[in-house]
Length: 76
Image (cartoon, rainbow, N blue to C red; front, side):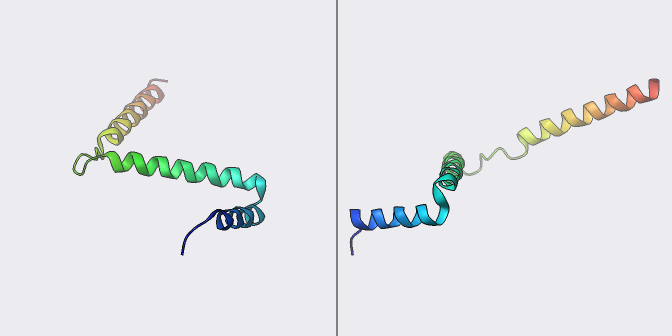
């Protein structure tokens, strides 16, 4: 069984009827974003995910700002 141009046209018409022209652009954007994120994650070699490296820095900065706020409250 082959997939020809007639089948493609039928699928496009059904998708347009189901989603509508307005929502179709949003669905396409979400699909593209998901594929882009998947490709980026697929490029990272196993064992080099870098989990926690960027997160730890952000947490450390948040702790520092919280400590600075507490010190300011004590001094006033």
